Length: 253
Length: 110
Image (cartoon, rainbow over all chains, first blue to last red; front, side, top):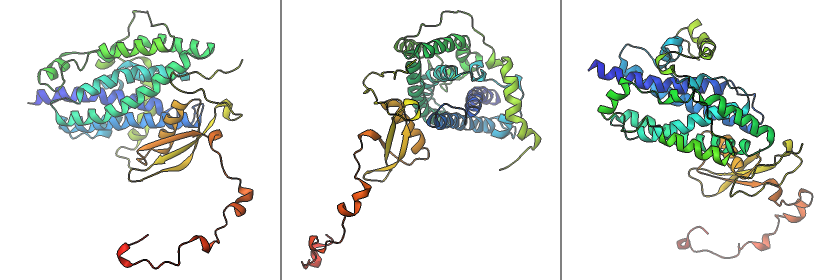
């Protein structure tokens, strides 16, 4: 039975990591956004992701049975133990870049969580149901910005095109699947098709067309995040995020 | 270079006023979870109607304050002039209240 739990633990931590790293990136933007309303929006979206991360981590920590807490999972693991997709750790860059990253993630998470809401594991289904509502709102927002910037001025169009081109190479990592996914699919914990990219591809095509943007054509993809092989950026993000907790283990506010 | 407000299909083009880099001001009304009517809670800037709704939701319903949000461009609100408030809103008119009827108890509160 230990093997079964570990599969689900690994899966949960992957998605906890996705959401934590993305939430951390969004937190970096607070007080830097061009408008007050956008600042609050980015903080809200970041908190949504961190809330989801907490749900994933708490469940994983319980199933694991090593006595670790959600904080331990978030703050005491090193770069090679983090299993987020490499897209999450990419730096914020300009507004267009940040929005492109967010859009790719939202287009990925919405169909994923919608599917996971039918998981045979009740708790995972519950976590997914909540995250799915948030992802739906996030996608509306980020897709709206892609259209506004893509079908906007010459400068906004150029920056938006550059952003979607630059980040495309990190999107395949989102759909990485291995024996863990296979095992969970067999048990019905992962509904059939949960990891498919059809919906993602359709959403991306639709929004890019509305935004008058050219679909990225470069085939090169940088994967590896799900097995701990990250880009250099995670190595900078983690110390900043973890330093306080590591300096004062068990710290409470 | 002039900034052109992007047209999101189905939304009206927002009228530009001289505020916040050309982004108009919108008044926000929120109906609380157990409320009957929308209540004015504040204002936000936004370039178009869709963003105004999202910004209003993000800024004013962060902690479960509401189930419905209305946004209206501030230029569309017609407000009474505060300088003539005392002429307009004279509250000392006892002859307008039906205080001279005796309402039987069975009728209840009117």
